[in-house]
Length: 172
Image 1 (spheres, one colour):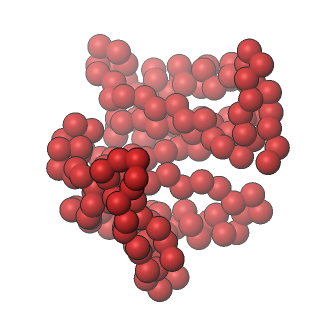
Image 2 (cartoon, helix red, strand yellow):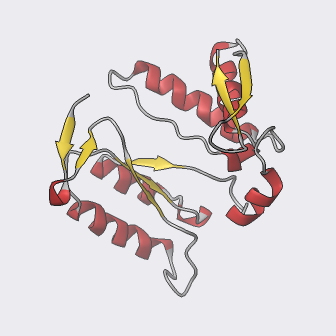
């Protein structure tokens, strides 16, 4: 796997994206989404080129065409973690211990299937990051997205993880 040197001599796999995860912004931080988009544009123009970056924001009102245009301009991917309107702490409380799907999000599943379809056509492929706090169990969400794309439901084997008490899933 190719590696690239990064800041201060560190190494980062050229095939792994670096994720910038921004918490929900309040009006005292950015009164308007445009202010954040301008700051993000400035930030992305200053970071080293040659690495893959992903940005996650949690303000639904910032998901504006200008936001996506800035990401496109800098070759940066967007990342979506939670169903809009759901707070992180509320998702943790609702979904722990992440052993089952507890809230189906058809929009997210349809979006996942669409992203997978686009990735199939791209020579470089891409990344899909699905978190347990979207529906309660990421592996089930991924399986549902694959099923929407292919019409076939993958078999999922759940087993206890030796590292944590959470359940890990494997697509078979």
